[in-house]
Length: 151
Ligand SMILES: [Zn+2]
Image (cartoon, rainbow, N blue to C red):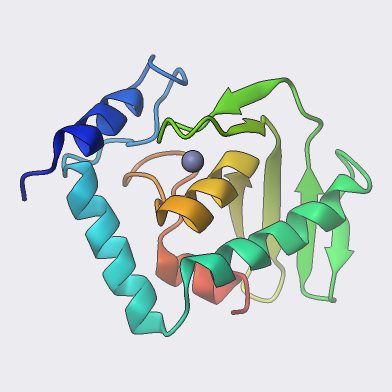
């Protein structure tokens, strides 16, 4: 589907080398509008919201921040490690938001699966419904997040 010029500009901000070395789209060949629509569809199907997913991610990150670089077991079935931050990164949606470059690693010990996100990932999910493109390092699709975060 064709997207408006504003989204097109944002998509260009997401290319490798624009805001970050690897960009936000991975090897996804869809345009930004189609990525957003598919993830919105999947979130609706799960009966949750972007805000709910982001709130759950922030819950773990905020616990991890209390002991940077040290794995912390949370609620018996999660292990969270938050790395120390190194500067700031602007949101590619060009809304003047800058997030700390800080990464969270979460392992669901019951499922034996690990996922990663950054503070910017949380912001982009919460405010823009953007989970990044397929193949992007911080991409976790709604189903994966729903399952691993225990939503
Ligand atoms: Zn933003």
